[in-house]
Length: 427
Ligand SMILES: [Zn+2]
Ligand SMILES: [Zn+2]
Image 1 (tube, protein in one colour):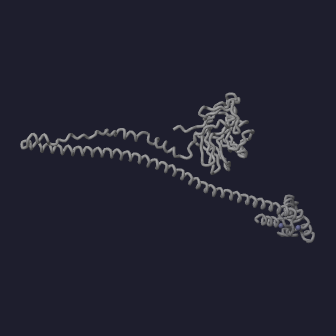
Image 2 (tube, rainbow, N blue to C red; image 1 turned 90 degrees about the vertical axis):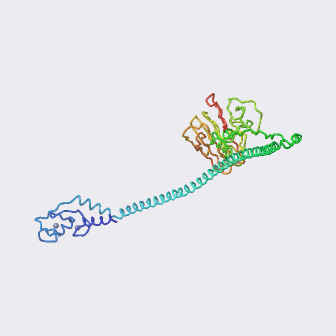
Image 3 (cartoon, protein in one colour; image 1 turned 60 degrees about the horizontal axis):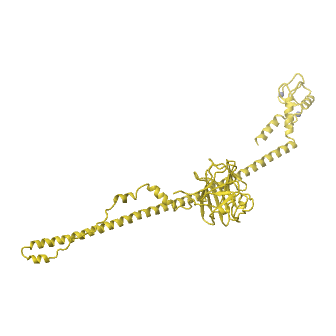
């Protein structure tokens, strides 16, 4: 390593030219050469002549040298660095550093693997979504094309019927004209013979009556045109909506399942909590602890979507419940107990009641919540039905039959008295 070659040259610099060891009590002569104090004294002792430098041979008038403290300190440091203990410490230090880097490398490698897996998964899921979106659009195109064909076919039939009628009329008129023509010819012929025949004969001549061709109602072209005009795109879009699956289901509440405090609108699409129990028949289907109610329809297959108006209520729960949920007990709303719900608390806190709960932060408070149940996929998805932005999806949803689930929560005086409503698509 670069460090060790530097060490070596430093060590050489700090080596006494006499004993070839690291300086011991280094001293400097006037010629600026260094030696161990002991070495130079011994050297000078051994030669009888004037003192001189063993390296450059310069002669000195006396045995004079200066102790070099800075050099002594440096030598001490180099000597310590060369010690076994220091070596071991350094080795340990380097081994630790190596290990730490190897571990970090492994860590980065692992993270890279995860990210690469994410890349693969993302590509795969995007492909699946792409396919799904394309097939949904293909279905819409198909519906639209079928609608177009049906509308054009109807127009064609109408045209054909009217044309046939008109052609028939033309035929009748032509027939009449022919008969009349023949009559005219006959009368003309008779007229030309008037002088030759007796009046008696003329009277016996066959003069056929006038032809009568039935009047047909005039073609109302304006009506024909008008009946196929108007806001055509909207008309076709409305017709198309009938074929869309799933379209918002026109659900109603099931009052028999409702907690006695709940009261309903006559059409069973609005519910509110009255702060006191109403006289209701006893039913094993009734929620007895919490102010809950189910939808009147249960689902065991297919895909279903419905929308719930929550307006500016300050708290509510809604979503899907297994038909078998315990309605007599006060039960925590969570998937383990057969509930897949969204909830609002304290006006602004939105939660998905997964385990553990998930706090949601919608861009704006949803006033209408869309619930999408896919029995095949086993998912329940919530949307802000105002702009159809996604709020939350439960996976691994499983039950024999699913019921739309609602809880108005307590009215708290007037704070939360606003009814919860089931939205029906008004077309
Ligand atoms: Zn020496
Ligand atoms: Zn010298």
